[in-house]
Image (cartoon, rainbow, N blue to C red; front, side, top):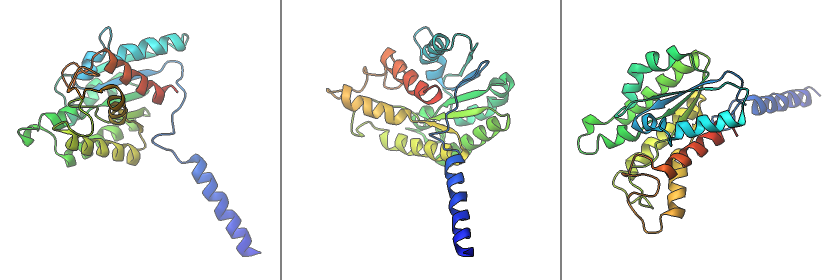
Amino acid sequence: MRFVCLSLLAATLLLVHATSAPSAEKDALPLKKGERIVFLGDSITQAGVGKNGYVTMIKNRLAEKHKDFDIEVIGAGISGNKVPDLQKRLEKDVIAKKPTLVLIYIGINDVWHGEKDPARGTSKDRFETGLTEIIRKIKETGARVVLCTPSVIGEKKAGMNTLDKQLDEYADISRKVAKETGAQLCDLRKAFVENLEKNNPDDSEKGILTGDRVHLNEAGNKLVAETILAVIDP
């Protein structure tokens, strides 16, 4: 009888843990009134606040869907930024804004800038420790965090772009960090690869989702907006 009781207790505890433990990909909470969302990143996010940018698309969609929520959207993208740059300006450009939700879209320059000179990029170790520190500091304020994987540097399919291998490695680091920190994951890398597989029959290097292999065109901005919205406001 004692063994049966202990077994039942263990099973109950496991069930409670399974149903209550946070998941980086499944713990999306409904948006609330007064949300303040900061989009942190590089030139892609800086351009994202433009008329047809992904940040603006998200802002307009949320305003339309949640008319009485008074959701504030703040762009915090700076051209050329890498993870160490985000670390340096985190307090001023993010924490001081008192966000309730922070979306981080970074990693392209960490790989791209190191193509010819690794010293100009960000090492994998520094990329991981930097992201971890950024997320930890944001979560300490009580804000939620969504971490995006880096999208593309070139639009050819089947890993044929020069930096695909490195970009996949950094995307894997972002996935690992999201899981370990309890941040939600927005897998833009996966979304872009799947989209290009279907919509780039001529295997073009650019012009499908980007204008220059990296920076988003209208279709790319739409894909990013829709992918993020599926995570933060399903």
